[in-house]
Image: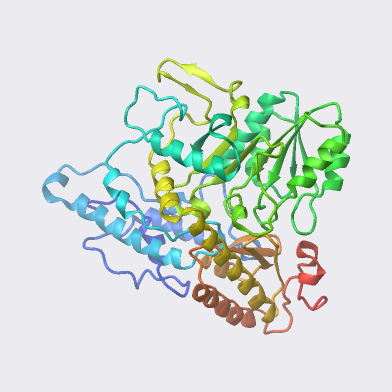
Length: 485
């Protein structure tokens, strides 16, 4: 086939139908033949059959081959491509259809904590430059195409937010929230090389990834029903290792339930257990680290308390077209990590070395446009809409829970996995959640709720199938199954 770029169009077409059914026939025809090869179609059909055969209708995850059957292959241009222009036209068609699929998927996005409401059109003029912030943000390297002046401006803003003076902090803009956790825990390990890492069972998986990467002893701490760390269990476990310093991951919003660990109680537990001056606290604030400063009566995350580092994601509450994050730590801790790099004419204490120089500009742009007042309004809107969703779910007889400082609404897992995929819900066991972000308004929530209620009536109409009991996950008071209703 002339101008072929692969078989991913089959998946794009299937994703375009608003009711969640296959819609390849409804997709607009492309200006030239785009049918995937027969062997690829056969592989795709095999994949679909395999998914249907998976237990409970849930997709089977097979390492290394889930996406190979639907990817856009890279193929060598034909000899006459420059003359015919068919390759360029084909790629333009693929990208146009892909953009349509993104618009459609964005309409049905509720389960992951990304703010999709942003407009960075004014920054398009910078996309022609390879902007790379090599090494330390505060020491300019020989590479001149960087955005350190924007990066440090953003870091100063976050340092003020968390009460740390300019001459007392060090930080950088990371490639994602996971990198912030990797760096914060690494700093803790450098401060206390023989320290033991403690994290609640509901911490983000990147915390346990860090423990494996750094070969650290790691102790998982039980959680309360809300999802926050159980400080009674925490105390029992640190006392079992009282001869070793403690490195603690404190969650400012857990991944599934949006629970905020009680930072003050964690500190009190450490000090009363004989760990004064022998602990390092990293605060994982991927989403709520930027929301909680604007919640009235919420406990403060501040470097006036004995914490070592805080990290947040930039692409979550702020909203950004690429993953990014912010990591802030105390300057006095960073010397152990930093080293001279002659090749850069700079120093480096980051995880990745080369860093996306566009991300700081995007963050700088939004921080300047919205400011503290703008973020406060958006936080209040998210919390209001989250309460609205929780109340509507319970009115419909669907068990649900919303933590006090959170915009993550947890509820019974929908029975139909196609519905789960359509709305891109994050699930764990018998529960699923919606993360109410600034891009989620009441109309979108009503659209979701009405469809869920309608579908749910068909799932359980035979009287044999029953909604799952979620009392063990969310507590009896939040479960509306036949036993606890």
